[in-house]
Image (cartoon, rainbow, N blue to C red; front, side, top):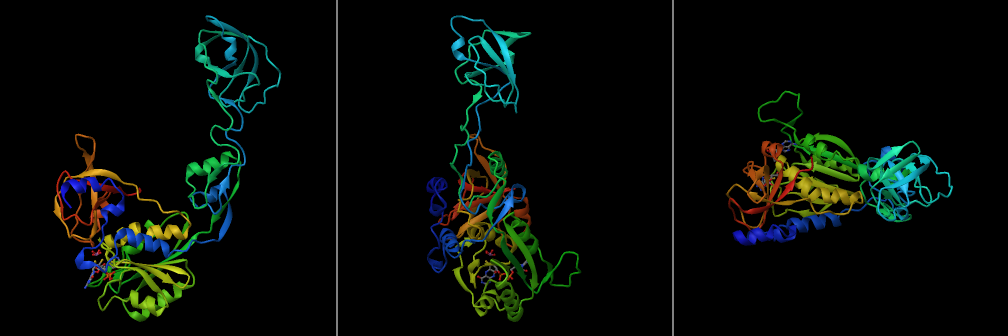
Length: 431
Ligand SMILES: Nc1nc2c(c(=O)[nH]1)N[C@H]1C(S)=C(S)[C@@H](COP(=O)(O)OP(=O)(O)OC[C@H]3O[C@@H](n4cnc5c(N)ncnc54)[C@H](O)[C@@H]3O)O[C@H]1N2
Ligand code: MOO
């Protein structure tokens, strides 16, 4: 792929950047095929529970929700001022009105029919009394006791929020699978709904594998390291609709790995492992999964980092085997495994948020692998496009590039050289 076609490709969808493995690696899946397959292996959970609005925040809607009423519920004033009839503004102003009543938010207007030349003092949020079709803000009026004068002619409808202009009665507000963000919870509250049927929390167990692993705080012997993936994965999966259980760490033996995967298989909707995915004599996860009756549908993906990512099934659970290298674990969890995990919760697939950005770096890469590079935003170029600074690419065992990055630059699989000034797809981290 040359410079110009790379610049064009960045603006199309991921599949266009992701032509998959080159000849040398035909057995590998492209990233987009891996995501599609991972999603197809995931069975959406049907169990639900009814929760109050506080508890439902961040959870996934289990069944379509229609509005039980219109919003606003009634025509009301958007400003403090005077409710008037636009037909009372004949000829040339100023015009004088008598103040015949007063309505504040929460009041029910008297229902009396007002005469021409009468106005009602009104406050933000108050119901518009029958017969009035505009509100003049009080700053445009001079008040003298029970009268006011104004030189301002309002438009019909001015400063009136109409019933139903936000939401109509009985419209589909949220489809099943919608995540209840704060704004959505507020909308439900405004309609008066107090209990919501949400998908029961997905039970997800995390197993870290590796004889070299110790926990932070423990003494380290030569050759040992601290288990950082346990904390990485638990924090990345700290989502309101997931119930994550840390199932601990296991040494690199086929027996221990089989035992822990077997015991997780009945209690969890999703089992995630880290490490032991490649093909060395110390990597037992794939064999252990087979011994537990599981199978893999995603196996070896044309990406860097994270090639050994594997996804399959384990009884009725979804199985996700992440590579042990920390950066590979983070990228594969985010890009391949999370779409599958979200599918189990009933959340529809969404393309990652991205923007075009300009590289300030040069590098050579292997053809045939979609590459994810940790980058930091470093201002904007003369045309206002964000500029990306590369933060290390060498080792998927490194943690600091990811820790310092604002997101990932995506290097198309066909690309072999990145040059400064090249337009790249930048996917920011969700902070
Ligand atoms: N002969 C081959 N060797 C490797 C291949 C290959 O295709 N052929 N693939 C390489 C790639 S790519 C990756 S990624 C890794 C994946 O390895 P595993 O999933 O088997 O992971 P481990 O070997 O167990 O560990 C790799 C690395 O990461 C460290 N690690 C593991 N778990 C943790 C943890 N919980 N916290 C912190 N660090 C962890 C581990 O100590 C190793 O340094 O395989 C390559 N090799
Ligand atoms: O996926 Mo590995 O992450 O290339 O080291």
